[in-house]
Image (cartoon, rainbow, N blue to C red; front, side):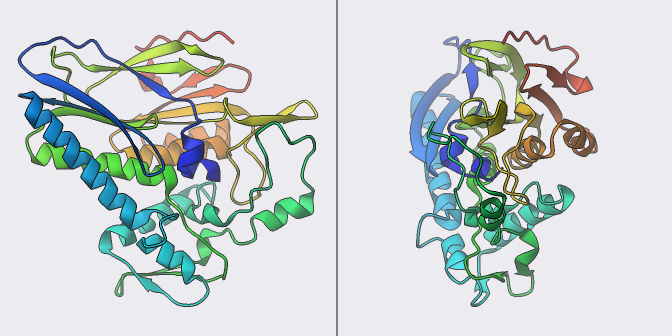
Length: 338
């Protein structure tokens, strides 16, 4: 599971393709692609004129950069890096924004029984998905790889706004969850400035609001995980978020069994059974937590969890190519060949 939180792995997952039919009408659409938070961001803004659209994109990039400088676990000057550097030593005071994000992540850890865990960052990378792995790691090595992982060893002090990692060597990292948070913040920023339509797409995890210049919903094309040159669905969306966790591009087959690069933070073993999970809903950060957790929990436990949150809809694809979807996807046609 951890790899999902990591932007590098996130960039390799089941990428959602944006399918738009733009017309040159009253409003103007401008797009820009840039690298932020260790991954690719595709930003699309609809505004009254080109200058306003380009200025808005600049403001979005500045906002994402601000968030990255707060929560990046690989920038040594970030607040999260300071927390990690002081693991087992002392609590670290952080901004309320960082504290609240950590608090929400810990809440997800609780409701998923640790299938989601921001302390994944301390995991030893013993699984290899570059073609070099030919046998399973030993049970002892797998157990040792997660000995510094465990959300219950993260202590929050609301009064002091501090985060303390109890064990030396512990680390936290937000990865794709942080990207989801950033896309939410950018949407709020744009709406506050009167920008009524756009998309912030963080390597396939995206927040959408408003409509295309032609007045139609945005169309979110979903890549067939068994044939990445094709789509298996196009889903209209005008407000909300969609995130995907998947394993179809990075996995290893050992003794005839397929192992995902998404690792269970509690056991150290890769997730199995599901090829991808896509979640649609009002909040990209939350949707990301669900999609990641469900990959680890598996089909039955994952459905039981997310069905408690009816404002979110979902699509799961098994390793064998079976599509399972929530009831509120009844009007969407899915066609998958593997």
